[in-house]
Length: 256
Image (cartoon, rainbow, N blue to C red; front, top):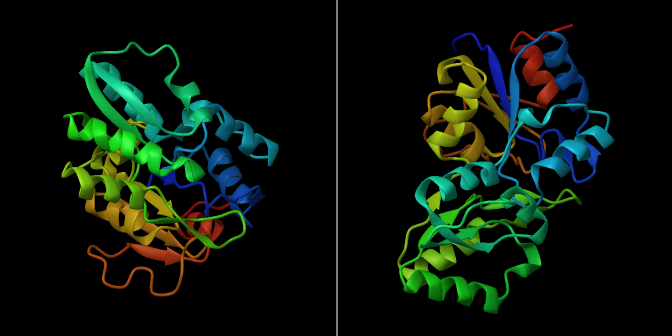
């Protein structure tokens, strides 16, 4: 594996689990900061705006700048403006903060994120009818599952994306992980090539394997949603696996 000069790091299940830091994660981030190694938090989180993610980290003693956080909502905002879309948002109310003051176009589009209990029949059917009428379909992410605050896996938004795809016959454009543009834009923001960057995550498919497919090193950590055999049958395989974020950055050359 080529020498790594920068890192993309997943948040949920890697840095924190619910409202608790994963052991060693704060130390790992401190090492990266002290060594002036570039890093970005590349997360498919669509339940909270960027501001609250930064504030949550700060409340746990992890001080980072807003520019360290890359979310699908940021990518969606750019896409809506660039294409002149008229969005119908199926997202949590809190996330609308990241879409404030956004000019509205005239091309209908369904923008779907994680709304938790908001995935009611009525909400899904309203989105379905818009897709039936020709609206574009943009999914902020399509993960299958995530690690909940209690440590148990939970159904993620990907199941609802798949349901709307099945019913409408429309394929969603996914703009979070594993979209290559999402990985590559974060690399470019660090002025690094994909081959100089490692993605560290707890999702074997959407973090590690997807990163390798996009030209990055894909590092799988055994925290969060990880379970034995998580990478079995995936192609490409993760570049390497470690117990946690601290072990990963240490093994990849970042020491005090």
